[in-house]
Length: 145
Image 1 (cartoon, rainbow, N blue to C red):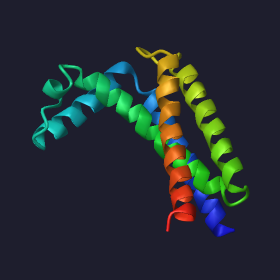
Image 2 (image 1 turned 120 degrees about the horizontal axis):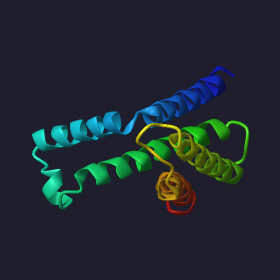
Image 3 (image 1 turned 90 degrees about the vertical axis):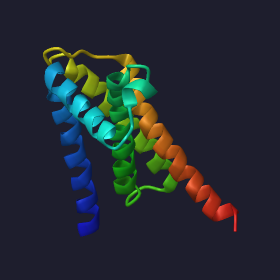
């Protein structure tokens, strides 16, 4: 029982973190991206030249993808306590998509930000990739010895 509660608490905490990032205005969000670019540059990765001056855009989209990859993983981990494998995969995917859509709607009310269906697709693709990894990992463990 305690394990189940901990798993759902992690889901809620992660959803709150996503909500907090989405609540940042465009200036705050840009500063976060600039900081990440700065750190990557310190590590010897000239991300602006790698991405032809579009590092900020790429970092933002990778952040979307990663946030929802993690959300899907946490949701699946919590749901598998009560559901079979495939219903857990599907339910986690549906919740990930709905949260991504609601997050974009929320951004409509944040200064300097706005909703983007493309971002919903990027967010959802993070969940989809996580789902594929989980599915194929299980498939391989059952069929390849």
